[in-house]
Structures are given as structure tokens and as C-alpha cells.
View (cartoon, rainbow, N blue to C red):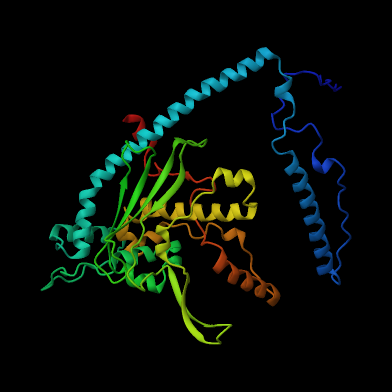
Length: 418
């Protein structure tokens, strides 16, 4: 014989989660189970469409009701005795010290990154010499590279060196090719940009000194003299917030770019058009040259700015505008992180295309389905046309909130040993 144990509803220490609502679950609170008639071969498509409509309706109702319950207290914490509430506050005090340790840990990991970044600098300088032709590679360097190629490809055959020497021209368009092999950068580098990026001879990273008010890093793009702009170096600085975020990582704050000194009529971030205007009084006409913003890689050096707290609190920006700004900030941050973490340290693999083997290009494959009829294909084409203009290229990396991967390549155990 089984017995039922009564539940004491007034027990204040019942293990009810803080976010568990006291009301019944939405489906149990009045939503009836849909009745689906038998499906015959004659009206199978109509019946399936009806079922899908019912399911979508139910899903909308459930999501709507759940949205109203998120974050609502069940009243459990409020019902605790004062003595227990004091214990809860004490735990918060202990957690403050945990957060301080986590912040110290991340800063030490960042210091470790800086240490090894300095050790890489002579190798990056040697790489630049070979790329620009300032110095020819040594036989030892060539042999070491051929061993790597043979290890990665069993069919690799070293080029014949009889009567041949490394070219004094270095490797033309090295960085342009490396950047274009990155899927997102390839989408924003135009043909006009390519003419300027052929003059790009080096890309470097430097971490901000500890004396700066905020941690961060700086990307430097070095150019030979060209017909587009006067700058020899274009820089982009990414700043983190002083304290680490809730997830334990540095949080992206904002970015600052170099002001490009464009030569006359060479601004790649603008397109110029000639318009004819007529004077209403004299009926005379004139030609006016007007500029409009243009898609360009060099917009990278004019990063989007986060909205001010005043603008958010005052409601000057609606939700759609805030989401658009957030998407632009996230994309800008992700491009910077990819240049820092992927392209600079593995530049030769991006030049050869080998780096693409390690990119997860099919991560969203399950989100798509085949379209069989023409109507669906037309709809897809229309959406694709809109997305090409309005929606940034698909990104990989941190979700919204822009948690900075300042220690992406650092082994936590190494940090602990420092």
C-alpha cells in the first residue's frame, strides 16, 4: 500500500528556485490540446498546413506567457527569516573576493600574453623582411618550411633549386591575399580597396601599457607610400573595461581608429556623383559634385560608437536601433579579435589558404532547409538581396555582450604557474 505525504505549503525553507513562478505552467493553465483529424491522401497537404498553424499558434502563446514570467520572484527569498537572509548577504560578501581573484587572474593572463607578444616581435620582423624583399630567406629557413609542407602533404614535392635563388621581390600582395582569405574581411574588401591594400607590408599587434587607464590592444597596419593616403601607419585600438565581466572575461568597451589623411579625390570610403541643378529664378543649370558613403575596408578605422547611457535611458533610440548598433559593434570587435588571434600569428597559413581548413564554416548548416518550389526560392532570393545590403556577414565568436577573449590562446594552467 502506498501513502501520500502531505506538503507543508508554509515551509519557508522549501527548495523552490528563485525564478520558479507560483502559478501553473502555461500549458496547464487553460491551453487545450489540439485535436488533429485523420489525414487522408486527398487532403494531406491541407491537413499538414492546419497542424502547422495550430503548432505555431500554441508556440506563440507559450512564449508570450513565459516572457512575462522571466525574472519574477517566487517569493521564496523574501519569505526567509532575517537570520537566514544575513547568511545570504554574507555569501555575496565572499563572492566579492572571488571576483577580485578572477580579475587578478585575467590580468596575469593578459600580462603573460604581453610577454610572449614581445618574444614574437623578432620573428614578425623577420617575416616582414622576407615579405618585402628586404632580406632573402636563408637555406635553413627554406629547408624548415619544406619539412613542414612534406609533413602536412605526403604528395608535396620541393621545387627544384638548381640555378634558382629566392626572389628579391619578396612576396607581392602577401597581406592583401591573407586578408581576402578571411571570409568576413573578403566581404568588405572592395576592388578599389585592393589597389590600396597592395601597399600593405605588415600588420602588427601591441598591447596597451599598464599605465593606461584601460587594458586593451592596438593593431597597426604599415603601408608603403601610395597614391591614396598620406599615412604610413593606420592604427585601430580596442579598449576593454577595467573590470572583468560576469563570465570572467574582459569586456569590450570601445574602439578608436586612425583618421585617414586621404589624398585629393582618393577617399575610398566615399563615392562621388555629378548632379545637375537648375536655378529656380534664372533657370540656369550647374553641375554639382556630391559625396556619399561607400562600402570599404577602410571604414574599419572609423569604428561605430556605443550608445551613451543618456540616450538609452531617455529612450531616444528604439529597440531596433539599439540592436543595429549592437550588431555593428559586435562585428567590429570580432574582426579585430580575428586579426589579433588568427591572422597576425598565422599569416602564412591565411596567405596559402590552409587556415581555412580550421575554420568551422558549416556550424549553422542545421538552421537551413532545402527549398523545393519556386515560390519559396523567390522568397529566399529576395531576402538574400536585402541581407546583402543591410545585414553584416555572418560572424563567429563572442555572443552579444562582447566578452573579450583577451586570453584566448593562454592555457589557464600556465597562468596559475606564473
